[in-house]
Length: 101
Image (tube, rainbow, N blue to C red):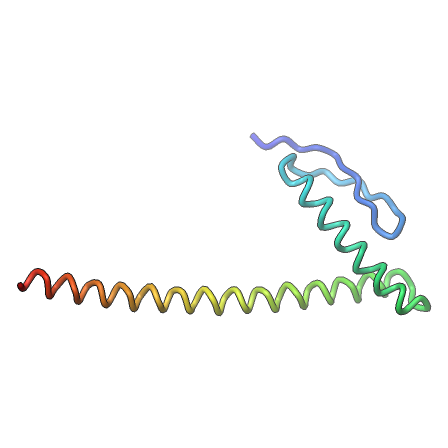
């Protein structure tokens, strides 16, 4: 059974209480810190923007990173799958040759 616990994350100088599965608490804190860092970085270069705009721009930027990494991961996975299939084909051919000998 997964145990939930309450944690607080701090984003834009506000605390947000969250209930998370115990083993996810460290990752959640890390994600919140990363988000806060990205929002604050945007706010430093665009102090005239409201907090909500800063949060949305940071979220879009992080989403872009995620989608780019997902595309790269999918491309690598497809490449690995192609290589595995080719190795399997070569091994099957070698086994057939060995059985005929």
